[in-house]
Length: 243
Image 1 (cartoon, rainbow, N blue to C red):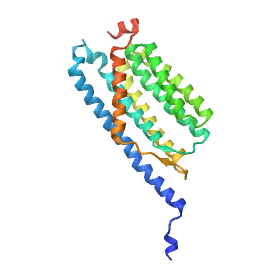
Image 2 (cartoon, helix red, strand yellow):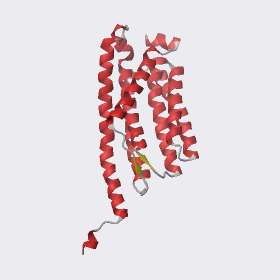
Image 3 (tube, rainbow, N blue to C red):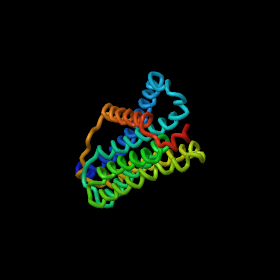
Image 4 (tube, rainbow, N blue to C red):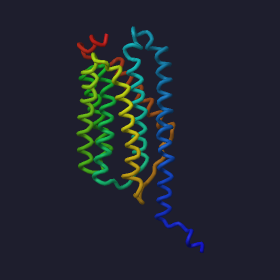
């Protein structure tokens, strides 16, 4: 009688992965929100300590630093979820992983830097970081690696181009919708990664990456990006437009 209630190894693995789906999905959201709050608080402190001496700092950089913090926190959350599980990944799944993370990295960061620093710096930052992320996350197959690199290249240049071209045509109205859709795509990536890589994989290996490590990495990235955003080179023509 008791044999009927004993779980097979397959059933146990399925239950374990089902548990991971909900606990780590919640953890991604919690980590991203906490890192975003920490980044915003640190930027407020840094503003009153250093940046308030820069004329019109809020008007020039305020919204774009907010979008930068959102990008760092949400991209970091998606990368955290990807790095938390290792196992067999099909060619098609690796293409989708590299394409999604490479493209979104380039699109989000490229748009922010393009709006403040101009098309060249925006494209360079978005292209380099997007291509690097796409290469690393799609590296489980040759096609995934190439797709990730292509997506980072395209996303970085497109992200910068979007904000530069829209700067004189209600870019401030456009950006909230742009960021919401990008964040929604990253949320979709989390569910896609579970469905394609984790759900039916009996050999999946889970790696624990704690909150302190995650937030610390986000702070380092946010600090470096902010320095480049504020003090980095700016296009002469675009600098004149942005005041």
